[in-house]
Figure 1 (cartoon, helix red, strand yellow):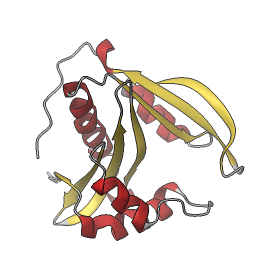
Figure 2: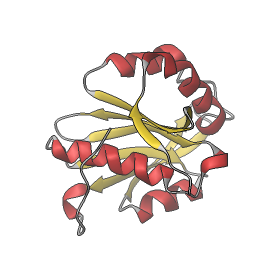
Figure 3: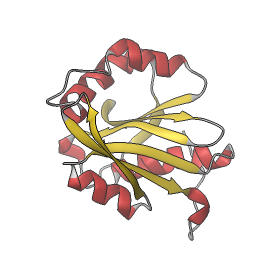
Length: 162
């Protein structure tokens, strides 16, 4: 069984996260998550950048920004070699538990309208479509906005661990 370690990102991880974003999230678009933007989120006390590591290498990551009313999932990506192993779910569950532990119970996100697998992934975790935004991604592609009210969870959520 493959094991992954969830760890907060380090400052030196920013270049790898930016490269993964370009390849896995922003393909076909002008890059909007360069290293310095990831580093800003690493320094910002209202944000968490979480990595999933396999044998020391980053296999996936997620960036969440927390507010008083809602948290916003800015990015989530898993290397294709590590998909379908629960890694995306583990990253998101950890960040959701952190949000609810801080008293923020709504998580919002956007995903490409053409990314049906991402939409299905989020729906399976309790997210629901709230709107569609035409041309959201640099005028090239529409977005599906989704939200999850964590207070509607029926099961017990585990506390985040590092």
